[in-house]
Amino acid sequence: MRSILNLKGFSSGKTLSSDDLIEFHASRLLLLIQVCGIKDSKTKTSKIEGLTKLAKLDFFVRYPAFFNKVAAHLSSTDSIQSDDVESKMVRFHYGPWDKRYYQVIPYLEARGLIKVIKNGSAYNFVLTNLGKSIAEQLLAHNEFGEVSERMKSVKKLLGGKTGNFLKELIYKVFDEEVKEKNLDDLI
Image (cartoon, rainbow, N blue to C red; front, side):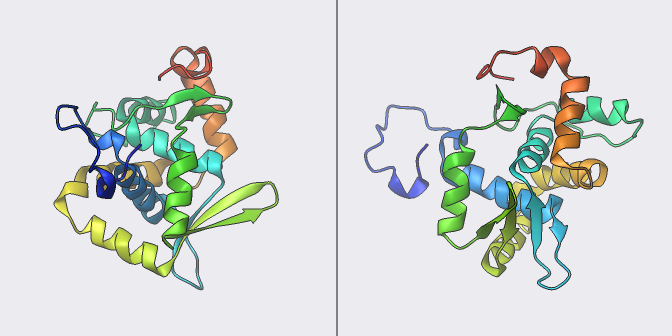
């Protein structure tokens, strides 16, 4: 993955997609924490409790057809009006996963946009004031309109669930599409 600020050595003959840029993924995760996270009553910033929950909420934002199937499974009328996959994920130990999290999360933390706080064996992802400000700026741009609407739907239906609940739900509803895949297979 590359930064948009470091494309000097990138061949002009090669294709570059947004999926190859760390800023693309960082923006989505920043918005995910802002929109799908729970608000801290003291700081008024958002947080997502646990890497499993972050990954599963991100999965449903990125795969709207899977979100729609889970909504129907939960007898909800919520839906996302798109079948476009935002960015591919792979099957990993606890279901859908993106190995780029190992690069994107430290990228956000190093820039002072999030704090990663260990809580027992889990990690909480908390927006800083700067992260909240940038997330609000991103939300004001039309380019982020579709993804922010997806996130609002995901938050409404699944935001109050635990990461473990979401993992088990994915394994129950998507046996063939996720559970039966080999590790590192694309979903």
